[in-house]
Length: 228
Image 1 (cartoon, rainbow, N blue to C red):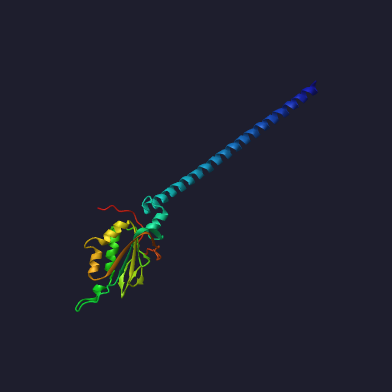
Image 2: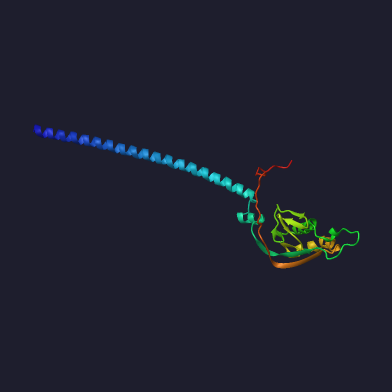
């Protein structure tokens, strides 16, 4: 009878120890899982913060790009406006050549030759009439293009050429033609000296892209200033 009680007591002790060990193991496992979950939550939170920072940075870059390109233009539209892409469209072709008349005695023979200001007048009239793209003898005109006398020739984009000159303009055909032909305008002025000016309208005019370099050494981007 005493042996049975001792066996029962040993079994009870063993069961108690086993139960305690199981409880400790379960608690340890739960704590481990809790620690793992907490660490995972911290990692996710850190990644979320980094993602939000990247998002805000990208938004800022997008706003800057939109501001620089007119708030609506794409990169292709910006390049087109800058004259960096070839274009096709309706418009006019204007051909100018020196006068075939001979200067009279006492007259300045330069009056019968095409000068840079003559070409500038033609270009300004076409721009005022809404020309969207312009070229002179194959040189695309941009915001930095020059038209100036260079001895007996004219320089456009630092490329010299001699008459005859061919000006191409893409835009409303009728508006461009009428701008040059209006009474007292550039065409009438040049005809006084016999300088040839022929205007041809066309439904499909090709204007090449600007081939020069576009670099800024002294100018840099800044914030918009409000006029006083």
